[in-house]
Image (tube, rainbow, N blue to C red; front, side):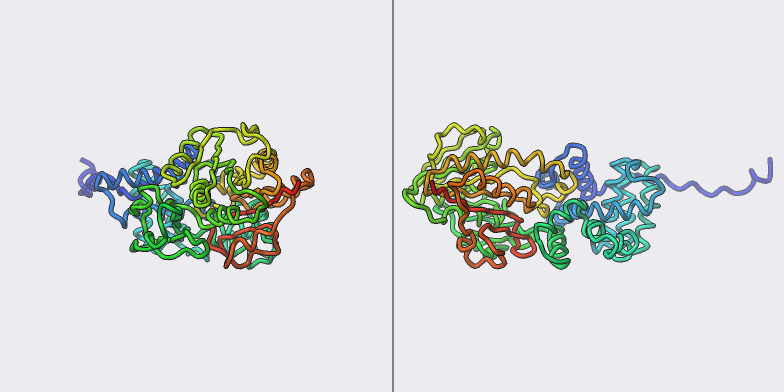
Length: 472
C-alpha cells in the first residue's frame, strides 16, 4: 500500500439538493416569458402571482418582492447589461439568455435593492442551481461576486461614457434607455439636461395605480373609502391607490363600475368631452377603442348628456374587451369590430370623435419597461401611414362644427405634431383649438394649442392630445 493511500481521506461533503425559492423562480419564469414569447410583464406576472397564492406559496410580501424583481430588472436592463459585460470574458450575445436573466436578477438585487450582498449572491446562485444546473451556477457566482465589489454609482462611473463626451450615450447607460429613445424624448422635451434626466428617472419609477370612477356607476367618494385610496391629482374621476393597493380588492372594480386607468388617459377623454362644439351633441365616436378605458369613460359621459357612443376597434378580441368595459353603462352605446381606415359609417356622422392611434408606446415605459428594448426607430415608419390614415378618417367622420381628438401614448414628435401638421395641411377646413383650458388645474402644459403630458411633470403617462375643429 502506498504512502498516499494510507493518508486519511477527507470525508466527502454531503450532497445538498438545491433549495427552490418560489419568489425568485417565479421572477425568473416571468423574465423568460418576456424574452422568449415577447410577452408583456403586466400580462404575464398577474396570473403567475395568482397561481402562487392559490398554491399557498406566496403572501403579500412575497408578491411585492417578485413584482419588484421583475419590473426592476426590466427597467434597468440596459444598465445591468453594461455592468455584466464588464464582468464576463465574452460578448453578452454569447451568454445564454436564461443565464443572463439569472445574472440580471442577481445584479438588480445587488445594485437596485436593499437586499444584503451575501443574501443577494447566495439566493441568485441557488436559483441558478435550480433552473440552470451546478455548472452554470458557478459561472453566476463568479460574475456576481465581481459585481458585488462596487455599488451602482461606482459601476456607473466605470461603464457610462462621460457626459461631456457623449451626453446621449451617457444618459442611455445611466438611466437604462436605448440611445435613440433618449434622443427622441430629449427632442420632444425641448429643454436642458435637468428635464431629460427627470423624465428618464420617472420612467424608471414604479407607477401608481390609478382608478377611474365611471360616471353614473361609481363615485370617487365610494372609491376613497378604500384603505389605500387617495384623491387623484387632476381628473375629478380619479382615485390613486397607495403602494400595495390591489385594484382587484376594490368592489367597484370587480363589478366594472370603476376601472384601472391612468390619469392622463382620463384627461384626454375629458378634454374631448368638454371641448366646445357648434350645434347638436348627440353622436360620439371612439375610433380606436381597444381595450376600452377611454371608451368606458366617454360612454358614461355621453349617457349623462343623452348622447350615444359608437366604439369601434379593428381587432375582434380587443373589441370584446371594449364591450366588457362598457357593459352596464347607464345609457345606450354600440361596440363594433371595424377597420378605422375603411369605416362602415358615413362621413360627417359624428359630433365628437376620438382617435387614440396605435403608436410606439414610448409614453408608457413606466408600465411596460420591456417595450423600450423592443421598439426600433424603424417602427416609426411603420406607424406613420396608419396614424395619418386614422386621423384622416376622424376628420372625415366629424360633422362641420364638431371636434376631433387626436391622441397618442407617445411623445415622439413624429407621432404627434408631425402627424397633426401634415393632416392640417391637407385639410384646410380644419383648425386646432386650444386644449389647455380643458385640463383645468394641470400645470406646465406648454405654449399650446396641443397638450403633452409627462410622467415627471404630471405623474401621468406621456399622453399627447390635439383637438381639431372642422370648420367647413
